[in-house]
Length: 468
Image (cartoon, rainbow, N blue to C red; front, side, top):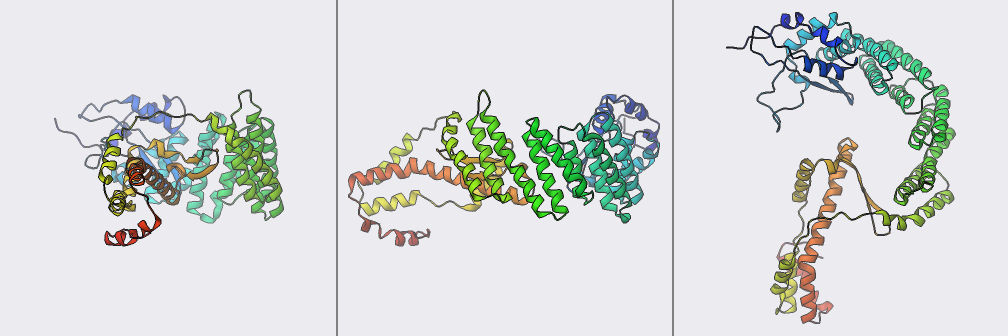
């Protein structure tokens, strides 16, 4: 039986509105599950009744507009390794745009209607759709606020602000959005013990709206409240935000003071960690290290920075006692050692050193980078989070950002750090497999003098190696 082409009337006449009412919550994610669970096949044709997810990227904002309208669009021909890939804006067909335009006016739910108008704006650049989306996102945010879904509420207000900036229109919509955000902060700040007010103020800062003389004092109140509750990360965020507001008001002295208070939270948090029934010196040392860096950046006096640095040094060495060894598979290099010693045994000192040089081939940067990039794709999880390298005394000697840092520069820095770490491991392995065994034989058979090494540069030039 042949497939029948889908037409708009198929969806208009369906019971998709009832599916919205069956969702547990009025969020786009709940609708996703409700439509997937409905799965009512069209009786006239043999069709797959599934869904389509649309991932929208604009202005560093990711909107998951996953509208589940009882159909599936199979990504045939350009599937990923698992048979599917994330859908892009280019995958939305003219049929789907017409479908959205047809359905959107009859949707009573502001959440789904906002996402449909957002899609129309991104696909058609119709300002009417963007304005509709702005006011619908505001309505959805109000409902989510009443339902205590703070993260979802903030996301809707953020998207409304991004749309308002995108369309301009003499900032009339932006003023409406900013006023709504300000009113929301006024309502929730009296009982806010977390990041809700912080996230909303960041939206105002991002669109260059808001009164610094109103929000800077509120940040101080929220920071003190978080400190009293021992929520040092929250307090640190509000002190930093207070500094940003003072920066907007060109109040340099107050901005510096707020930055110093933000840096001081690392010291206070370290003291709390050491006062725990089972203190972690490694954690405390990490906090003090961040305190030293933050205090220096904030312009603290060198005397105070040196004092915190001495406290850091005092606990760093003992902090290493908390480190544990992770067992790995043993590598048997005994055969490599035997061969390495055999190839230099009985040779003259110059012949032996020449053989040794051939075993230490230089590392090619392009090949190392290719191996690191392949490893990053294959073992993604271990590359997501940044890493810090410490020596035997517990002192931090290097840091490598993770793939989650975002942007091309941190990612390139992470790859470069992995390349350097890979080269160190390879040379360490070569040393124990080849260089150390060869040197042991050479020193046992010859009284090597410095003059015996004079020929090395000419040897390296003859073999196209870098002279030393």
